[in-house]
Image (cartoon, rainbow, N blue to C red; front, side, top):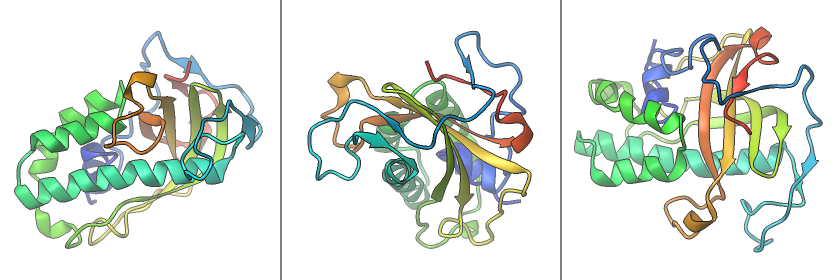
Length: 214
């Protein structure tokens, strides 16, 4: 299989698809929160922010289309990291800053720990230049002012030469948390969100999965 990134981690997951999937959902930290037994409504409300013309500004109603826009913007930055590392064959300070701008804990640590394995990947496995992964939200499981939990499909066709796909019984679980207000001016991340978890699960595990969503 190809290693694909959830950051450096996912490219070391599409080339080893489950390598950065977070395992089978066991062993979550005590601070995690168990998802409800039934998914929440796919649309929910949250306090709006200013800048209504901004496609990633928080709207009155958060729906799958909005979360798709946010994920596209975040994974565009992630794609920039992939392209920079492949071009320089080094983990530059800028690449690390970009990862820190779009990922929060615990995912940021996972991403940084995956960098050595990512550097060992054969560049010929990637498109030249690689594009960005595509993420298509399937459902919103939790919508809160401070965090979002969604399931999504992944597509690495623009990133690697021979992309793998999720099996029908698998799904990508992604958790977004609000960025601290003091960091909203950080131009490396155009959104008010951070990716704090991204893992591949069996669909049967989603309802009982624990996440960092408070």
